[in-house]
Image 1 (cartoon, rainbow, N blue to C red):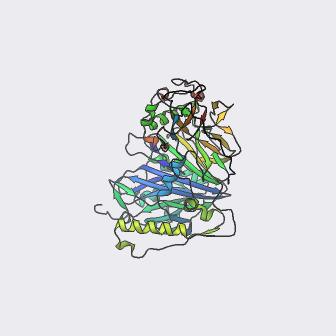
Image 2: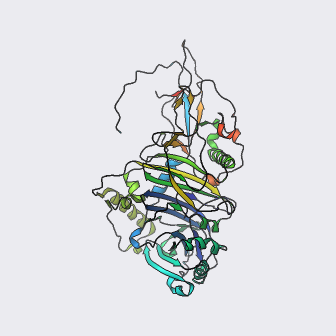
Image 3: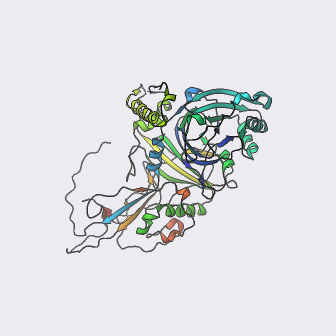
Length: 506
């Protein structure tokens, strides 16, 4: 399953984002992951997994196979809109900000202290899973139901070879090497969530299926992500970006090394046009120093951000991602059904679905728990691996709060570096381009190193580093950095005197 965000290869030359399961196709089609985003919510033993998949390949039926710890029923599975995935990814992505040095002769007014509150022919469908004699293979169909465009089957199996043969004989094209990867999941007693897509219900654009995101939830003592099956579809390196939402708690890997991404690095102005290559270089150099490490890129309260490349998550976003089932069903979301949907063209149907999403976000009834949609920490974890470097699935553990990547000073003069222990989670990958003051200085005691918006007013929004798996790699990190990156031994191009001192706005 690739739990939490992932984007996959568009061509064989590009790096793929990892998926916690794998794709299978009907006929002789060969499938490769294209793009997957996954968001996990966790409370107690309950996990809610939301997953958006894009697939590039022939316009024919295909399916996803994902290991799950329990037998899922129809009420555990639903489809979502895609917008929330973009929002989560943008909010947590490493960001580039721009600061202009303020007039050294400017005298700010006294600060008033305030109390703060807190298209084409459609091929024939693949056979239904039960058309093969499952029992002959040691396979049992535990549940079967439809959700949106997905035909979902939950399978259990006695042995890996039988499961592989069953899927192959059911006309699913299983990638080579599946049997040994099935084996440990079967030994653990896990089930297999098979979500097959009916191509008659899906729009294809340039060979890519536009699928509704899936969400399902289950209870399990272990909080883990079964990523090894994703290697079946891999051609090269895969990027796994995991977003975890949990109340008052950040997470990190329990069975791999953990590092935080170097942050608060000043960059040369030209990096604005090469932010993706810069970040790919920074990430690669970080994991080269800590092989097999899982990199923390973000840990912050989901309802706030500073600076914000997109609005923070609101109650509707959290309900969409699983809050309605996270706290013992203390939220009720009305179900709305569209009749005669097959008579609507795709554009009209998309409009109707948008209205439904809005209505469901507005008509929600809260139960007695009272914990609400506040206090959730959004953690972003990033790993990059290939078939030879990933030995076991990713297991998560609770981790203490950290801070870093803020325009905060240590000792009154030096911008904080790295991650430090803190009372709340306020860590982000943040990088800055600073433009020194070039105007006249006509006062006796000029104050340098005050940073804010551009001279003409306003301030450009932060630039989020997204789809970095597709960015050119192998560039010299030192060509981008102006300030040193002490964790990686990069000296930077220069260090301006008095930089940075503080951030002001006029």
